[in-house]
Length: 552
Image (cartoon, rainbow, N blue to C red):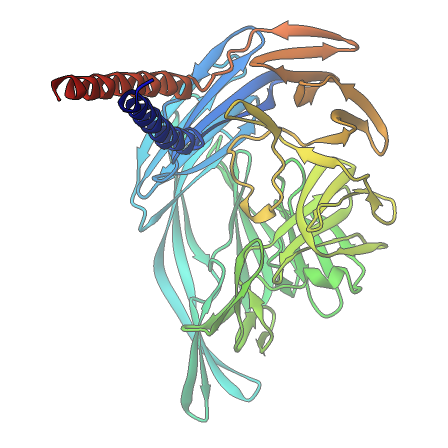
């Protein structure tokens, strides 16, 4: 081969390699932005596969059942909307909320879109929420203020107590029935407090929480407000609004004490109210019926966190960084409102706390500054620190993931934690990305809102290159064939994913089901197009070089 011909060939090879490397980098970068999340949910006793495909800030959701009924929702922009999903009474409800607009999709167990509602509202005065079968817009109008002075800790304190008229506009997203409900002269917690010492205003204080607690459960709305006696709160009243009928009923809770900022809920979402004073901690259901009194001890005292906490207008804020979050803590003087008004100096954590009631146990999740759990009832308590995430596995088991990646579980009613073997993970679905499949196990509680629709947690154990599904704690497992991945479990049936297909495992047999799992065909198509372009460019360069040599 002549020197010129060798030079031409080397030049072309070099150009092809450079173009290939450049384009390959672009393809890897763009294709890595897209992934598919597969999970299993149950609607009205029927298994439903949920396939969420995300790329950049856009999300597509497809649902399919074993009868090949299928529905694909319009593309959701995560950058423009806050998205919330929940199941209720056999329906899947997907809510997309942007400033001043609300879009709701309601899908039944046959995967029929039975409702698609778009609603505009005045976000400055109306608060939207979904509960049960209803879209609700709540607005409160300030119609009066009660101002009064009192002396506490040697200082004069002025408080302004609001009086509201409440308007509730509801739309049933099943039958589109609409109604308006009004409640007048509702008294809230103080709008603000002014502290005066030696005739000098030393601070204006404003509430951390809403001045009017409003809660929901199924087709009910509950408004809890204090009843003042002289200069203190003597009892509480609950206005229960039945959204089906529009009727309103009132219940008094004759408890002279603080309402707790912890509002525990059970696994069905029913909330409980906690009240406390110096000698008693009492629990009531959200409708006002008495549930139980708790013995005051080091564990139950952690429920003693007043709902009405007031802090200065411009508080000093410390930013406490951790691996999971940036946690603002308000440090200076604070005021608590209850049967008495206390001026306190301890720190107030402004991040919301999570509270659950499992059987007769209370589970509190706090950030201060790291996540830690407190689990207790009247006779037993447990503090759990260095927690990264936790899952309520069923009505009797709590799963806990620690920062060191170990996993323990707690069986309700027994004492102490039980550690699971290394190689154990907790999964709520599968991530299919760039032709690889991985179990989705979110290690950080604070960022667990995506994917939007996750399945119930399953426990997987990696052992000698294969996975086993834990079907009964601690050591009862089922071997999963290599290359198969568990999507979820329902009615003792395991749903498996393998090479783009889904299978039902009934005992020791696999039955293929015809779900349509989308593939990332865009990347493959892009590779073909790019390499055709590279080939054409290389041929063109070769012709140019050859013609140049011929002329010369």
